[in-house]
Figure 1 (cartoon, rainbow, N blue to C red):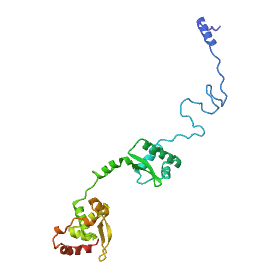
Figure 2 (figure 1 turned 90 degrees about the vertical axis):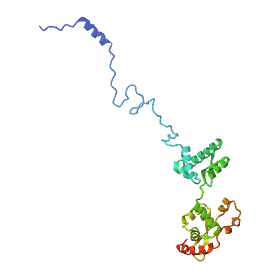
Figure 3 (figure 1 turned 30 degrees about the vertical axis):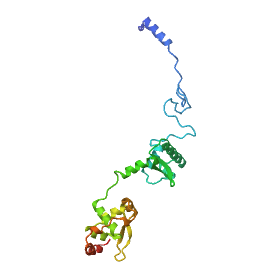
Figure 4 (figure 1 turned 45 degrees about the vertical axis):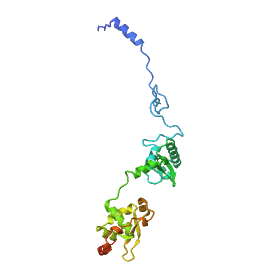
Length: 253
């Protein structure tokens, strides 16, 4: 006879107690049904407490990274050398023209309320930054003092020749000074002290004369008020100039 397996009584009791505490297993979910503990329709993601919420109907999605509308408009106006129309700025920032116009008026009011040294004004069909009227004296001192470039000795000598012998060609000025004065003449024209005043009927050379700004800078009402040079010039200067100008007139103006 086969021997029986003997199990200790204490082990039997322990096993019976463990089995009586087991809970019945939950049935398996049907195919396609949501998992236990999750809400929502089948196939949809469960709602989460964190993360950005989707915009509601009628709301505008937040703009991406980049400067705001006011900062963009200020940057455009700072580099503009003439008034910029609203429609041009609207095209650059890709925003409605009405929104850009409202932002510009808000900026202008903000600058005025803060008593800034500049103001935003709408002129000539566009917008541009201007210095404040209260700061005009300060700006004038800054422009005139320390920023004014003085004329060189060559430019002063050339200007004197034009002033006393005008209208005069470049070749004649070069003959008087004994050096080529083309570059200096261009500088004087750019400074607004000298301008073209017709052509020589014999040679066709361009003639130059001083401007009203020249008299303004010297504080003179007219050219007749220039100091007399005759007492300081030698008697034979005209004969010497005629001989020296013969070669210069052929060079051209």
